[in-house]
Image (tube, rainbow, N blue to C red; front, top):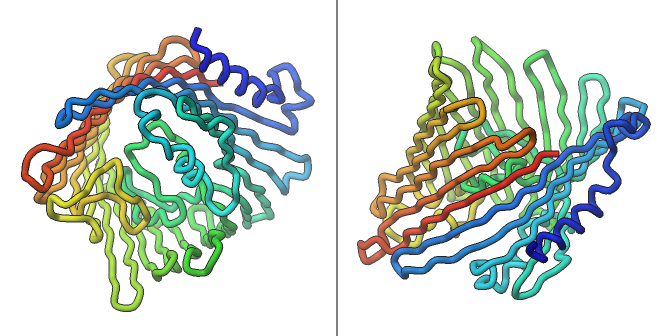
Length: 387
């Protein structure tokens, strides 16, 4: 057996040793926990240089909620641990530092336990917050997910923790170190305000949201400060007959600088279980020429959700049987580089709590010399045990 697996198994065993068993009713009264273990093997092929790289990733997650008997305060924690190895990792000598920086928001909750040329073992808390509930008011303090987005692929309203839709292996999505207060003004309406911690005022994000329902549609408006910009925006979701419609937009402004983002999409479910969606993104900061845009290396932010100014996506998922499902996503940008992102996937249930998944991500685009030179073909095989 691979020594790396034994090392990781020992590490996660120490992490989960305190988790309650189903027979320990005295502990489950105060603590609930769940998580998973995943192993993913990756093959990367770059045809323009005829290079094949392999990569390995062991991952463990533990979610825990502590429930005192006062029904007022709950404590939530989410621990994510990953072990990287393989050809691609060995060609990335700064990966340990990069991962450490990406994991930390304001609070320093990321730790590289092993960081050498052959192995990187990182663990960090991507959730750590206290939740106070008092009648119609809820307050959260700490690292949390503030989900203001509506659309399926891109979320211009997701100011606090924008995420990359290509990162399919991170279902929980990143968190933000923030204080958030929510006032439930009615059965289907709420007023929410949040401020994200930062070292200086220029990096602070602080905004408010109001969400309500009207004519079977959910509407929202947002406004506030996003780092160096002011921001106003909004969106809605609902049904036009049997067709779902999701739309959101944000307008960033600071002095003479203006940036507008818009995401809109429609989805439809067929009687045979086929689910389809189609949508469009306008990203004013995106490039329109061949340039240097690359889906896997551009700097993601709430202001810049995709490398290109225009993007059209189509997605379809179908359950072939109770234990086998599959789907495909295609993103095309009608700009000079003619970039395509194609991602088929298959999911198979091996047994209870055991899943085997296959994903592929193919990126094709023209470079400055007008030839295909930025192509990347990535293939992922993942085994998951849910706990």
